[in-house]
Image (cartoon, rainbow, N blue to C red; front, side, top):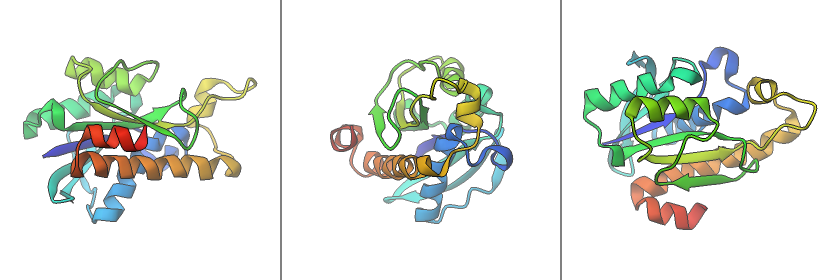
Length: 185
């Protein structure tokens, strides 16, 4: 069983922000594989189903970004999911919009949601799919950039990144992480 986590903030207020790329990818997987994300448990919204004949849990923590790890660790512990079967998807300012990066492990960098996941699990040894959102222009502060309005001209690039990340997760599950890294990095 895989746990696929999209990092974001509760969607009512943040659904159309750069910081919710992880949620957007999980939503796309949910649509493609008809997995309803409708259970409110473990400080998150989750649903279970099959992706490429593998049992999965799709999780969108509802703790707000900085406490995402609390939800992830509760699901991991309850379902006894091994670290090798955890995939965390999140936005990354150091990657160009429309591009993604897949890694087997690594630091959380400056991303507070990932810092929470790493600290809660007490390890950096899990798969992550980073969706590029780019850096803000000089006159925009970082918080306004990641949780603020997205101009129409940026949406196409960001949606391309979400689509690539969705396909990358499917490739990881269908084949393996090395195949996904070779294909998408």
